[in-house]
Image (tube, rainbow, N blue to C red; front, top):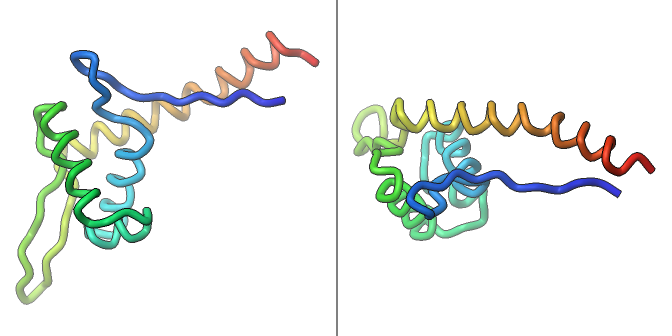
Length: 110
């Protein structure tokens, strides 16, 4: 037997950040493209934009900056605030994982 759990952040009783947005922002950060991030996550470009817009409205902050193509090509980057939010969420997740595992082993020793 093993323990499973999910972590998300809420604001005004609405989910504002969770696993889905974490994965989307991580992929955008790594790939520099909403379209490529959406494809990697097997979601449509429209769905990805919808998730981003909803999160931006609920958080009341911009998460991404898009650049129109040109000589260097277009692309998408995370805002500084989004990068901080992503890093803090991942730090929270990484801190909680061993704690939850330890508690599980204490409460369910067999």
